[in-house]
Length: 209
Image (cartoon, rainbow, N blue to C red):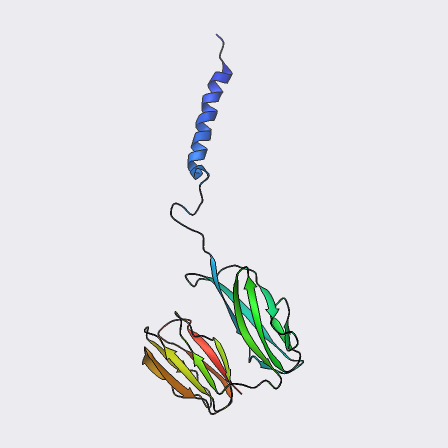
C-alpha cells in the first residue's frame, strides 16, 4: 500500500496559512475600523527663565508638540530665529543674545510651528498686555511688560480664574469669571506665575521689568 505524502501535507499547509491570516487580521491597520492615527496640530514654546536677555547671555527654550486632543505628540522640531542680528538659537533651543533688538524664535515640525519673542539688550517693554484664554490655555504662555504695566485678562464664555503664586508684589487673584475683561497692574519687578485652578495644567507666567 502506497501513501501519497504530497496529497496529505498540502491540505494541512493550506489550513495553517488560512489560520495565520485570520489571526493577523488579514494585514489591516492595527488601529482597527474607524480609527485614525494622531496628527500633530500644535507646538507650545516656553522658556526656562525671562525672555529678556542681554548680549552674550542666553535662555533655554523647550518645545512641546501636541495632537488635536492636547496629548503629547512625538515629533522632532527645528529651531530658527527671525532676527539673527538680535538673537540666535541652536539645534537644542538655546537662545543667545547678540545685540539690542527683538527676535521671534520658532520651533517647527513640518507645517506646524510654535513661536516666542525674545528681547535683547535695550529693547523696550510694553505697558499693556492682553492675555487670552483659547481652549484650556493662556495665550501667550509668557508675557513681558514694563514695571507699572497693566495686563488685561480676556475671559471667554468658558469660566476660568487667575490665581497668582506667592510672590512679593503679586496683584490680587481674579475669581471665577467669564465673558469679561479684568485688568491687573504690576507695580513691582519680578516673575509672577499664575494658574487657573479650574483646569489642570492651565498655567502661565508674567515677567515684569
